[in-house]
Image (cartoon, rainbow, N blue to C red; front, side):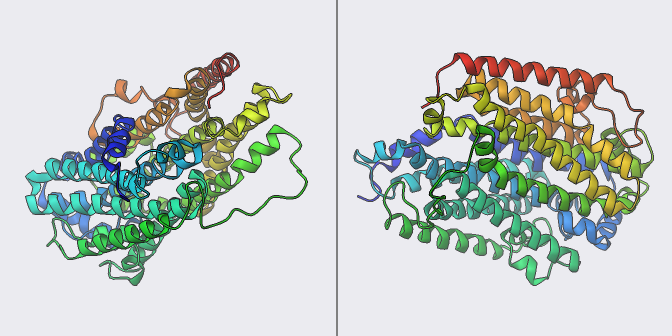
Length: 522
């Protein structure tokens, strides 16, 4: 009876995620599968691919970013260039799905209502894991089908490696959901484990050219690359992923049988006997400071890492005119070093938009959890309550971009002013997407999660679009497509920056107007 109701809950989970799951599967799998076409356009001959593999193997910075190159075939280069990031994307999607259907359901009180019926104790967790399995199976199928032309065995190995990594972190999220008492902490804990896994893999690959470092073998992300798709597949490495999934699943099942609905094993530290939060802004800061600190450290470290790669930008493309054209398209018509810097700055801008969207949508979580209603029942007005969160979202995005610019400039060794200015020039586009999130949350809260999809689409257009040769009209669908390519790529033009800032202000104002008129979510 522990699994009673699993089928019904699984269908409910799939229905609730009927848009998110296909989009994640197509984006993640499509990103990997489309790599064959873009790399073939860049390195059309076997000699060019062999030269690329040799140069990337000798570049420790590139090994840290993408991993070692195990094979110089087109499929092998796809596995090198896109395999790690495909695995990370699958892991992120999986942890979101599992936490959404476990701890988040308990936090909002819906799980208690469902558990009053004929629902077994382990049914909700099983349904969440089955939803994650559906997602990762779809990702594996898209990757395998898209790359089958490069070799069926290699395509299957890469698909299973990416999907298997997703399931490792799905079960890790299931375990975190038993330990913590909030969805935010469960996601944060699992994301921290994923970040540690990526860092271990990067450190190990940077130190050894063949991926034999112990650090790499300690990371599930490293296991995915050690499957060696299209380079003499190591099928036995998939057993490591399977073992991790089984062990973590068993641990999660054991813990869920020993706690009540809504309870957790890691108790939250009680607050002070007397409250010290004197304003809504102070409360917003208390709720969001941990997230902002994590993003700040990540952007600073990322800037330092990418800044150290600037001098080797010419080695990345060599004499390949197509690769040079893509970098210049992303970073502007300039010297390759400036184009590389502009490309990295643009990437940080698009990632900062993800932070801004998440920070804007945080008060929506406070609404659905019921914590906002007691506050708004007092003399606190809705706009003053929302303002604290929005200030953190908009100012926080400026802070993390400043730190990314500082990291780039310090690691590069010069051009502090131009690089920092280029990073801050991304703000109008970031604020535009944040303003859209405010509009959706304020006027149509049930559609607020669509802001994530828009931000993800902008990231895909900016990072993958140039490599796929998409026309500029398509790239301009993203606000980032209208920004000047700085530093050095173009002259500074203020018109698009001012226009995007005005658009962000208009979207934010419209969203706050909608917030004043609608009911509070419960």
